Image 1: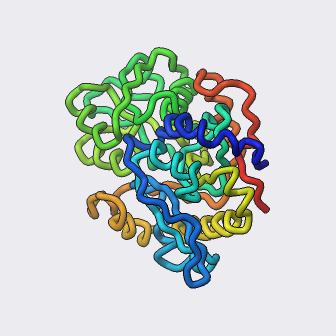
Image 2: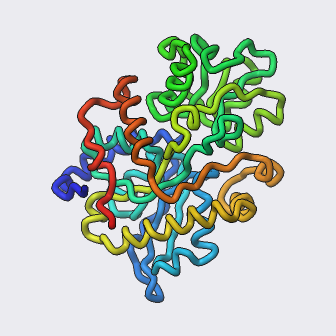
Length: 331
């Protein structure tokens, strides 16, 4: 359900949104200069804020193989390390869409930031032995099971966000005490070194860093995304309520194109691994070894509700969030 009455809150919400949605990445890259909504050769140009990780490969593939063009769109991605650059760009109209993890969007909704989820991104693989994010420990660690992580220092990329939510839940399910975990905020690229030198006991690392850790002799002891929900929707693409209300056909076209792009990525994993080199610094050899996420074609609303429940339980999301306000009103 769109909340156009909140459009007057946009400028006041930009700072809040930037802080809230930084959880997908490590830092504060500035967005590129605005060029929003222009039409060229009968295609509508839209800018999309993304993060240089495996999760957004379908976005790049869709532009490369013509999926967006088939839906009347010309997509111009810009890369940032997190929402601190992406959210203000979307709220101000400098970009039409952005990428964020689900917990960040739930937190944004709880603060009245006028954003709406329009398309799914990556999802858990459903296989705890092979997921695209994992808790890694040194080979000689005494941690053997998720419950053993209680009382340990665990690196995550953003405190009070989706990472500590799913790690806590995994430990809780295994009979451990999640309240005793000491979370340490570190950028993903720094996690393997921190585990290796003993700065932390473990790290919740996404790909390619989980594979890098394993290649250096570390062990995987938990797969928190899958162990929280086998079909967990981890992240997705959002727009502002104002843009969704004023441009429903473009938002629908983007949502339809992303559904097709996600399916294409699922069916062409070799092309996914190849396209990673166009927007990330992932070593080509690692790209061939890493575990890809599930590229979901629809948002698993039950898993979004689960993340909301866990966020409330852990005190990082206040009670009273209306889930219907989190989703754009699409056909």
